[in-house]
Image (cartoon, rainbow, N blue to C red; front, side, top):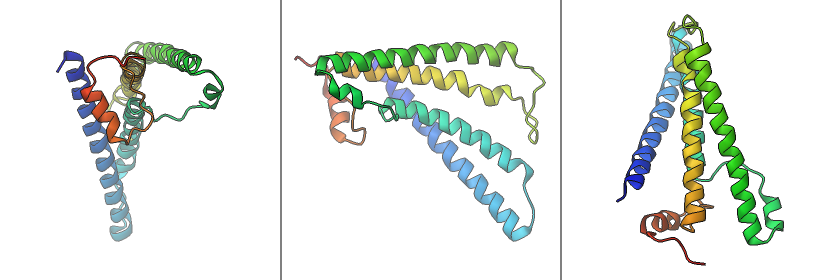
Length: 183
C-alpha cells in the first residue's frame, strides 16, 4: 500500500468516525432535550446550542465525504451534449474552478478565524470561544479540495469514474487498479 493510499484510507476512517459520532451525539442530545421538556417540564439550556454547532460540523464533514463519493448535486446535463473527450475536459475544468473557489475560501476562512475574529466572541449559552465553531470552515473546504483532486485522479489518471458510490465495483476497482486504464 502506497503512502497516498494509506493517508486517504486514514482520512476516510477519520471522516466516517467524526460524521457518525457527531450525528449520533447531536441526535441523543436532542432526544434528551425533548424528554426533559415533555416529561420533566425542564429545558436544558445548553443542549440546543451544542446540537446546533454539532450539526453544522456534521454538515461540513458530510460535504467533504459527499465530495469523495462524487455525490454532490451538480448540473451535468450539458456535458452529455459534448463528445466524450470534451465532456471529460469540461468536467475537469468545472472541478478546477471548484478547487480554486475552495482554495480561496480556505484562505479567507483561515484569515477570519485566526486573524480577524475577536478572541472574546463566545457562544451565548455555553460560553466557549466561537473560534472553535468557525474552525470547521477552513478544515472542511481543505478536505473538499483534497477530495475533488482525489476523485479527478481516479477519473483522469486511473480511469475509474465514481458515478455510483454505492456500487461495490467502484471499491474493487480502486483497490485493484494499480495501473492507469488504457484507452
